[in-house]
Image (tube, rainbow over all chains, first blue to last red; front, side, top):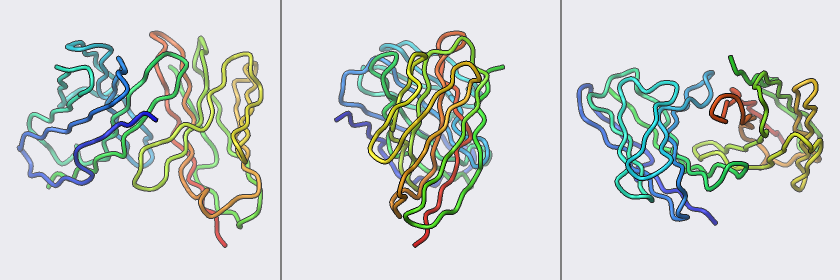
Length: 112
Length: 112
């Protein structure tokens, strides 16, 4: 079974802090994604990566950046956390078009 | 604009009863449609993936239907169990870049 592991289940950070959310997958998938999930808004794509060192903006990239230095690891970075970035963050990986997305269990980030 | 609309937003049923969740989409061109189950505090897990040529697909007590002409899908849950309490998310793949468009989900609660 594919395993997508997010490093933290819960995080509390202060406004202005730099925040790193880490995601690791163990199935050699090329495609990895970061979403945020908010009540009433569903999942929204922040960034995705289809290969090492490659990244593409999703629907809501503002205030975020990403890093993909190794195939198995995809990091989401909040350069200066703000309260409107309080959310559930979900990482996913995708082995092939037509196949399922495999999600991690999410990181619930609270910015105070 | 590609959109996926799910109804109802929330649903409460008694254990043992059946229910049907709806998903309407405007994504074009269409590639495939997925249903995910998301337990509280966990990442979504794939239930079914349906392509254009498939109009019914089952996974245990879950049966998904697809009408590509009317751009509608439904997820039918038979003989509900307490463990079916979760959010169910419809995701359509297609459009420019074959991206994924997420519905807002239906929150199902099964009561004893």
